[in-house]
Image 1 (tube, rainbow, N blue to C red):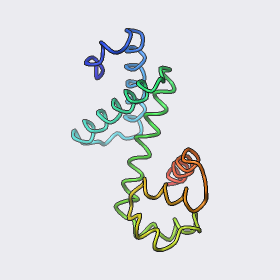
Image 2: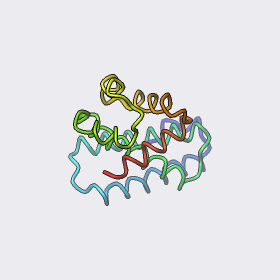
Image 3: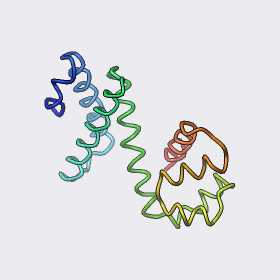
Image 4: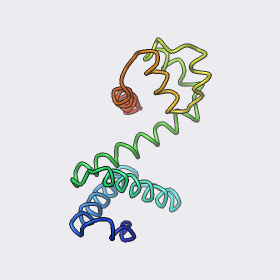
Length: 142
């Protein structure tokens, strides 16, 4: 159980919810990513557990919600890694989607998601939550 070290901080039923969310999210990932190496599997499990734990510490205790949060973060992170590695190749597509971003902005961003989201906020005046959702939605198209 990935959360046993945190048992002093959660009620037994909360730990059960964390474990159930982890197991449900892991099953979903295994069905959709059947060819992971042992190292990828270990890292993915650790990231999944950390996301669930962070969400629980912020007050989320519903199993299904924890599962969805974890899957959204894990999927978004892997898609963004691909974007970051190939930043120059994606710049035209990014400029098409977010036309107010300048070439100088894209050079300064250089594949860093926080900077990317910050520049979108700056250029469009959108709230942080909206920008994160827009970027997450865009990432789902890959």
